[in-house]
Length: 196
Image (cartoon, rainbow, N blue to C red; front, side):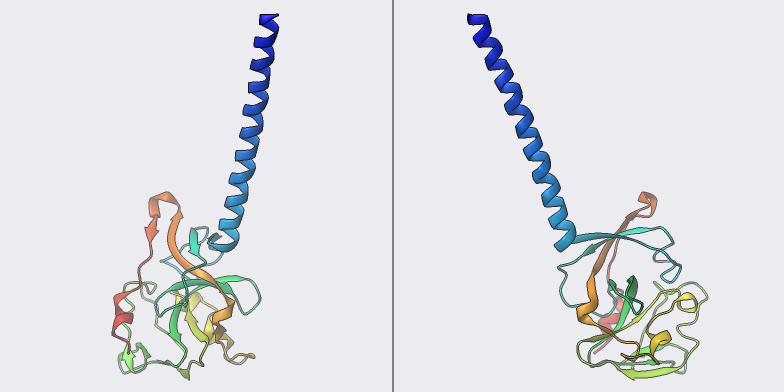
């Protein structure tokens, strides 16, 4: 009789432990899905347009709650063709973006950018000359590998004039986590601090 009660108690405890494990697993998956949907996203890099900052098949985490994009941020957004796209913010609403000054540099509000920390080696800041004022609520975006990037410059003849709405932004890239050997926390280049 005592052995049977003891066996029943052990069986009951096993069932309770299994239910608790399943509940915790479901809860963990639910939290992970909520984080993925609203807080942090993982994106892979499909093209060479952001080299050498990001190489093909690199992976980045994006903060979806980062707030309004700032000059110098690397952002993921719904691109001109409707696909998730990654580029660097060069100008925000109200900025005058232009290329090139006498030293062949991109300028923002007349301030030349020193893009040596992120521009692809031996690439031009832009082969095309341009001068645009970014409308409020819009962004002017460029890839770091300018000669291989279909960015705002490539879409100026389309509706929207090459600008991307702030509402199309999915989030700001905060870290390159893959491959592990190239892991990096992104920081805004200092050159953008000089822009007024």
